[in-house]
Length: 69
Image (cartoon, rainbow, N blue to C red; front, side, top):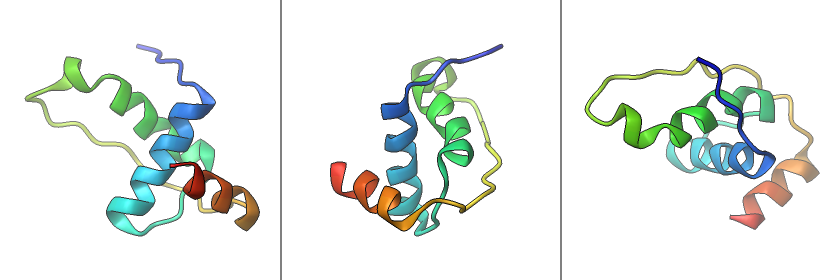
């Protein structure tokens, strides 16, 4: 199954990762969570996981993402 996510959804996932775990994730790393968040209703009651890798995000980009939330 392929799930397409938008830039806004990726940024929302980046904020969620930081808010919930205090980990910094680059966009590519947050894309899996963005897809999982998009499928929230479909996955309700199931166990799901994503692999979080990569914190290679420019500080100015990450600051903009955090302030947009």
